[in-house]
Image 1 (tube, helix red, strand yellow):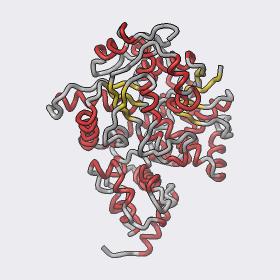
Image 2 (cartoon, chains in turn green, cyan; image 1 turned 60 degrees about the vertical axis):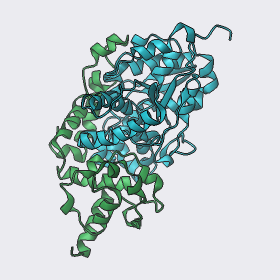
Image 3 (cartoon, rainbow over the protein chains, first blue to last red; image 1 turned 180 degrees about the vertical axis):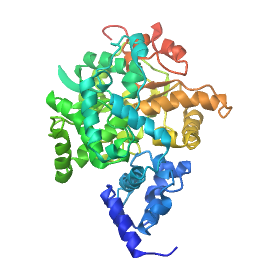
Image 4 (cartoon, rainbow over the protein chains, first blue to last red; image 1 turned 90 degrees about the horizontal axis):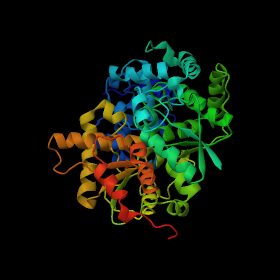
Length: 167
Length: 305
């Protein structure tokens, strides 16, 4: 691999702009990876390994790698990091870079559409189940509240998400 | 009676409303009145806005929080993901630039985030606000002799610096253990206590990797505790334990019957004498035998004792 300072600078700029502010504090100790459920489950590019690639300027090269979407956002890494990197924020910053380039599984489009239409990322008709347990059929949430749904749509339409054509 | 905003999220009201009903039954009986947050939506889930844009995440989260602020109540949620997402959003909103940007977005829907409502988990309200003594006083059945393995779930533990209520040691959580022990049941330690169940983004990204992680945790529970039931304060963990044990059983990957799993407030509602049909009737794993055991006559606590 050829180390290109321009690529490194550009990568760090993109990661920081997407919320991974602590990336340059990383000393590659690997405490994050040692405790990461995603690494344990076999996702190859999370925590230390991802940060290493990013610090070497390897951004586009990894755009199709789905590891970041296996991150549970559990933040064990953030808790254990001795340098204050907050690795989960770096993983999510990389995921945001991927998402805004539409490099993610089509299955996750459904949750964006659900959120836009009902205000719930997960939506199933709850009426029968709720009746069965003695609750009103309709939830007090946005699912049955047109004004609430409209508010959520307004927030999404006026965000960078609104430009991606997902909903 | 103290009031608290009941933030429902998605899975609990839409898929597992028996968990919602268990909140609505136990909290008033324990002296805390849940108040509906009308029009609240998704927190938003990790795979949605948080995966695209930080300020959009904070805008959607803070919209939910402003509903509680408008009622002058704190927020209580039973979903660990909601708890984590809302708490982290609140943490990001402490940064002035983020708060300004988010309030500019909220202005379009005539809302303003002020930061006056705190975020609590159902388990926190039970343990810290209501307390173990009051819970013990309201039991109708004692669970002595029953063995429980607990599953706290990730998003109430880490990162501890963004949470209002913290465990003394997030890698060795004790609140849920104590909440279970107050019923008289025995809570058994197992070596993968703090391990992730594999639900969440991992399960939707790669179900096999998720099941591998889950199986390791499950075997640790079975072999080290032989628990009568698993009790969790995370609705996502509940779904993973309830849905994935039958999958592993069907594949022949485990040689024991799936262990009945409860959300904690379901177990407490049963121990407080509420109707199983209302508070614990939706599950893949058959929970009827253990529910009958919990509410059996010989476990009834006599009045005045």
